[in-house]
Amino acid sequence: MPRAWYNSDRTRAAAKHMATFFGVCALLWVASFIPAVSAVFHTVEGGVYQAGSLFGRAASRLFANEDSLSAQLNVCTNRLGASTVLAANAEANQREVEEWRALFGYESRVSVQGIAARVIARDTPEDSVVTIDRGTNDGIQVESAVIIGDGALFGVIDTTSPTSATVRLTEDPKSAIPGAILGKQKTIGLISGQEGALLAMDYIPQDTLITAGDIVVTSGLGGHIAQGIVIGTVIDVLATPSAPFIHATIRPVHDPREWTSVLVLPYPSTSL
Image (cartoon, rainbow, N blue to C red; front, side, top):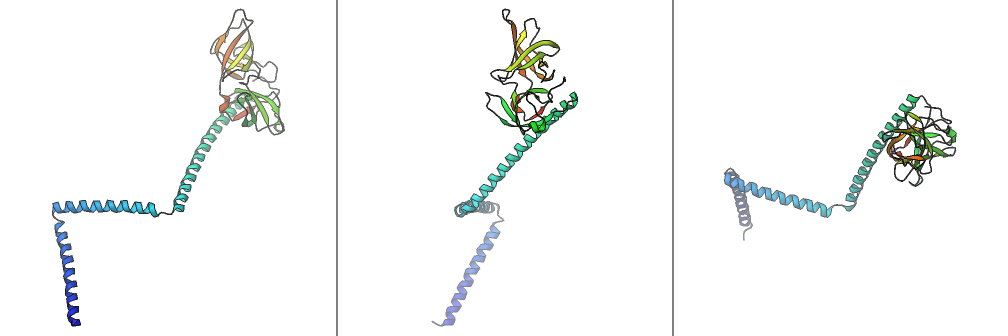
């Protein structure tokens, strides 16, 4: 077969195929202007696009580098942890600022120079004893009164070391704080902790007029705690005619478990 004829046939066949392809393309382009045909084209086009997207995502998950995914997970986890820590620190700092503001307001109001300290450790709830970060090197002495907030009694210094001290809280059953009813300074009782968050006031004389809502303060008896420091309010009174004393239940002004900033008053205390 002559080579020239062979090449001529191949050229004509190629030209025929190209002409057919372009003809079909032109026909489809013209048909796309027909609304019915255009709608079919768009439907087919959308289906092909969705199928391609699904295939692409599946291929990405199938062939993704596991080390890279693990690294990205670690980065996200670390960022979440850092954000949580920042939020917790911000909340704690705001709480601490509010506590110091209240203590400094009390210090200014009563014109007393106390020793600011922080709670750094808490013992078991049965003991109700906490440790603060100030000690004898800072002038802390045993039996000094410790207050929180705007002047509520937190507890009394129990033991000391050069750099720290322990505070026995008012809610401890072992505590014994002389108390009185505000405005009735002759009312003398002994305040101690009881089961739960409430306090008990015992040894109140039978002829004392005491009712729910009365404010209980330190009496100053004993000399190491100033008179007039607020302890709480009376919520219940038990007076038995045959008993020599009245028993009162007291709700503290503040929950000592919520406070980390305290003020240790000078010892021996003077009346506030």
